[in-house]
Amino acid sequence: MIRVLIAEDQGMVRGALSTLLALEDDIDVVAQVGRGDEVMSAARRAQPDVALLDIEMPGLDGIAAAAALHDALPQCTILMLTAFGRPGYLRRAMDAGASGFIVKDGPAEELAAAIRRAVAGERVIDPVLAVAALTAGPNPLTERERDVLGAAVDGSTIATIAARLFLSEGTVRNYLSSAIQKTGARNRIEAVRQAQSNGWL
Amino acid sequence: MIRVLIAEDQGMVRGALSTLLALEDDIDVVAQVGRGDEVMSAARRAQPDVALLDIEMPGLDGIAAAAALHDALPQCTILMLTAFGRPGYLRRAMDAGASGFIVKDGPAEELAAAIRRAVAGERVIDPVLAVAALTAGPNPLTERERDVLGAAVDGSTIATIAARLFLSEGTVRNYLSSAIQKTGARNRIEAVRQAQSNGWL
DNA sequence: AAGTTGACGTGACGTTTGTCATGTCCGCGA
DNA sequence: TCGCGGACATGACAAACGTCACGTCAACTT
Image (cartoon, rainbow over all chains, first blue to last red; front, side):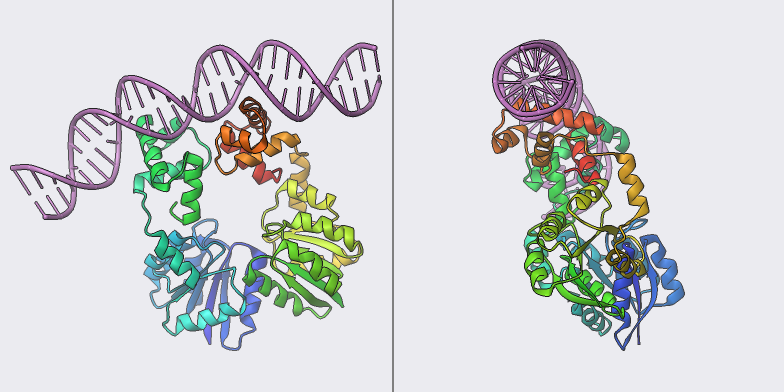
């Protein structure tokens, strides 16, 4: 019996996935959570063999939850299941200790199969996503550029960003400018969209 | 037996929802599609009693699909099931002929119940969303303001937008400005985010 | 020891935005 | 027929933005 924990914020999807998995003879859904910051306590209680983690979650994102989980319960296999196959997500998830990365776009039957392959020690990665991650290359943005870009997503003005990050306006302008250059964008808005769709954040 | 059509682009979610519904004794999933523009032909073939439509779909969005469906098969009850409860979506969905509007955040058991209530002739709307739609009020943007804002979502410059819409740059600036005013935003980026999160687009 | 790289900063420059006043044209209800 | 509101336009102006040249400093190579 494979003991599975499901972390997914949309209740209807979470419930549907868990009944789907519960129909499998060799799979037992032992825990369900709807927030990233509930993963750890639930995992400690339920002792799952596999943790199925969504990335977009309130509280704590799935990648951070994966890192914490891998640290505290290394014997627990981690499988990321997410809506968007951002190349950057894949790399960060693997760095966080995930054994697999599958996207919600695929057929439903693939889910149980992926879980079985993951517990068997295999690394299961969507092939389309794998080549995308390789062709896109690593994250070109420095930490500060990510900080500044991340603070610009909500449409804040440079002065606001500078105040929030305790930087001078000139420095913020420079980081924004170099981020725009690196992403090949023509302004901050395009740069933010590029960075988000690649999973650099 | 309630005959149900499911339209949802993420294959894993679609499959999970359909097995979830297939477990109900009185529900029969007679069609599944992953694109908005496949809804019509599938509905004509399967003759469902209820169409469960996601809004975010490739090809044709769920609201447009609902309108077409309501026009061609008026006896088919339409239920919107979507990730984001934008107040504007709700209004447009009801205008398009939907009988219900539920969000994926809710518990999974609610889905079958909503379908039964919808076929019984009831209008089923998430109560939280209903008050949100009422407090938010109707879409304050004029058609042109929506056009211009919609052309600005990808970070295009004013000159680009003007060229795309065959307007002068000054006009585009004016519409953008009034849209910013109406949304209470401080620049176009905030205005776009406001408009999107309200479902005005 | 010299060179490179990245974090951080300044000042200046031209361009793009957002706002405002003002105007024309058209359609529609009183 | 008058007035009103919406679409569309222009010109002007201040603020914000994106770029560039230039600089310091610490860390890490070679």
